[in-house]
Image 1 (cartoon, one colour):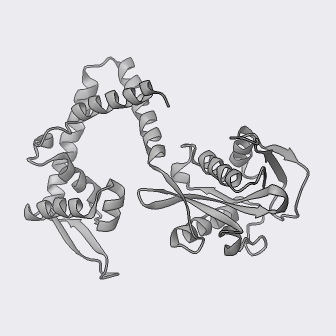
Image 2 (cartoon, helix red, strand yellow; image 1 turned 135 degrees about the horizontal axis):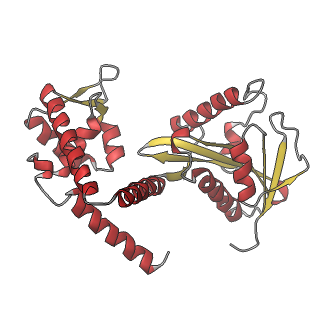
Image 3 (cartoon, rainbow, N blue to C red; image 1 turned 180 degrees about the vertical axis):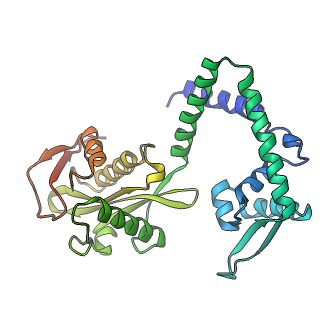
Length: 296
């Protein structure tokens, strides 16, 4: 990235914080800061686990606790142990909190309309389209991809959801027992598993298994439907390639099935070339290879 790109992001942030009223301690004439009001929005009408609030907003425990206590003093929020698990605290809006949330939503709609009102119809379309693109890109930038133990609950969730999706999409269904990848194969030193997370929730995965002769086999590539279109599949694949390169492997291999048309397109666009079958994978009708350069 260039220095001008960094400077543009900073200029954008300054404009947005001013437009959104972030600097105003009396946000939307509520008598509260944006942080407190944002917390009301995140808790919402259904309530939310405090741990999830911390992950979603990226706040440390101490600051979140202070925000919650301020809202409790106003009688807007209750925090209590979960009925399902007493170790888990859940925040809920009181009746007064629900009324306040309705008021905030009305004022927020009015503030958004004020932003658009002074623009021409063409400018409105341009701004809304640009905002949607920025939202997608900022969401993509918030995703974290890390090596994960395949026995971890996040990994289990990704793999189980992946298997369930294949069972729906493949003609004749899908049975992971027919094409197993053992936990040990996705654990160093045999291989590894990457799990992508957004706001503390798992949203994608990809594994690689090391084979003799500098071959790295990609397996279990999956991205949650809600975050598709953000380039996450390509990012996971690129990070698997980087892991393979660092491990001394230079030939990437993978297989897939025709029903996964978007996967076929991604692999080809990432430089993978279709080759003759190199294994007897039951759930495959396309095999690909990509040779990594000697220097990266």
